[in-house]
Length: 396
Image: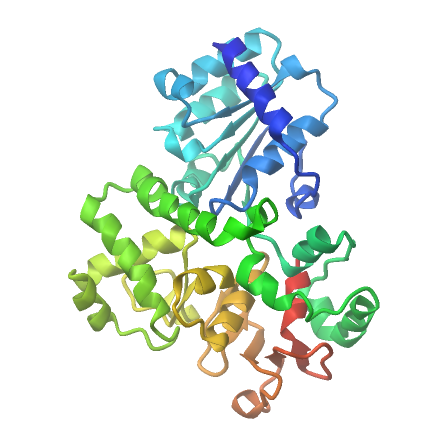
């Protein structure tokens, strides 16, 4: 079996043509014995794993990539494959799509405890893997992978390297940072392209079919990834798709739960469950105030699609205000805690207050509040506590 799996691995390596290294390369400690990577389907986890394996000087026969939803794995056992690979001198095992494998947590723990193998695993659905983190906490180090930041998009598109900045650096020195970036490029020239098409790395594979592939990716999450974790019926899958469309038609802060329940034909608690499934699957982004905590059965304060590309793919009319807020929340959540305040649009790390809008957005709603900022679209440079929206795409 190992010989056949290894042949498949070599075919994957031969077809791996992406050279650009994502931000996770600088964040992951590759010395750990058990590493988990979670994130939305399509953000590049498989590409990262293959790039990492290819970068190692370890002989080819000592490293192996397998997909947990392959016939050989589903018909056999991850543990038995790992044992055989280790017995043949294997050192590094990479397991993709691990959420498709039943009881993967138990077998990963056994592999960790019994074998001298280094293991990297990933899964498109963060749903089950985040629960697994508790079970594997003494063994696995988990990392979340987001789609392309605006900085990464520009690097891939233009071939120009850029620094990334912390939130504190941007807030304190945004004028100087934006001015330096402007020396290399026009920051708004590619902005709309990114908002509409630039979040998922597969955009650069074939731009003309990006929207089709994006919808296919989301359908796979709804039809395959979510049901692989939660026991839901066929009609629930249809309702999940309906819900995405209905969210498009609503303002993020004006969600009518009663009306949504009636349109889908389900009760309130089931609707909240549907929302949670889509949030965990990185299709929706549900935000609450700190006072509500993480209780999924309380009405969210705001609901967005996970990223701006989904707005343009699924909504008949993409409202620019919603697109701006969707982008801001998505980028900040990679490294910071984002919640909904009583005044303003977003509260970050319970310290910084942000109001997001167009270039003429004023401080009226957050005037005289400490650590408050206006985030303005359609401007290249800001001033004082007014910061360009695009610059928050340089956080990672």
